Length: 214
Image (cartoon, rainbow, N blue to C red):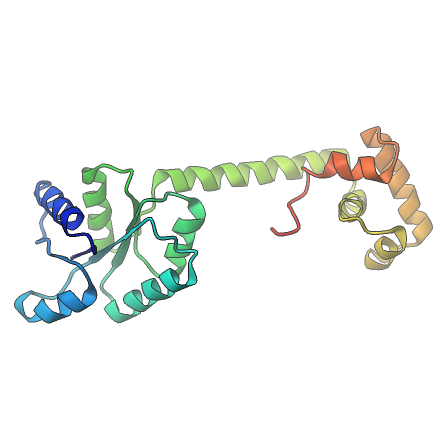
């Protein structure tokens, strides 16, 4: 079943899926209430494709509605169809329990295969999401390699503390070392970075560490 509140759009998608000679019947409704009113005339649902349009799943109301639909459908897979292919949107949708996320940028044959995958018990995500996650992992590994090649484990912790603007006394307390030892580490870090002060250290290492919000 397709759920889409735009009549022309859901009918076009329904006809496009039928044209793929799929092994399932395709029904289309504007809402769950509309489907419930006609449910007695149709066999049990095998899967539901919900068109989110440009709605963001980061919106709490949208996410709550999606979770409620997934919960109501029980074992029937719910697949999200949306305009965005942002990795955060996709991961959030998966956290809500969907069994697939289809961006509107894909072709109709890919859309049909994604539905088939959900029917077979799989979970579809677009290749763009996989590539984005791979690039993120690669960036993290590269960043870690730069740190370990340049600094000792203790120096990494001191450098990160300097990046966060912490004074020597706080660094010494948090890392359980003498303040004089902190100063030695800072001198060694400055030498390796060819920095002349703490501010320059913080500037040069800013891209070597994940942001405080990560």
